[in-house]
Image (cartoon, rainbow, N blue to C red; front, side):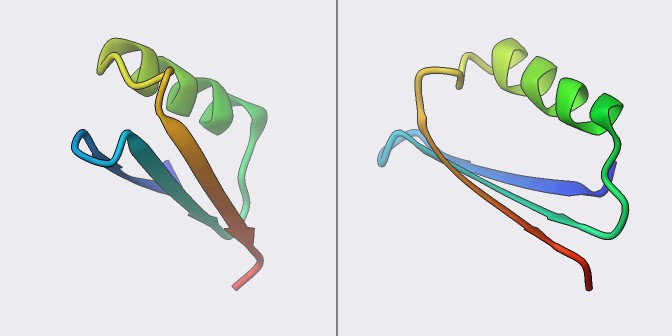
Length: 51
């Protein structure tokens, strides 16, 4: 998956950085990871770039 995820329980924050080609399946997988890790309630920062 071209999305790197970092979560901080102390800050209730998840940062996801995507680069290159991102498919819908990658975003679904990201959501599943957040759900499995009980991180859906965290604030989120998502960065997507083309480099």
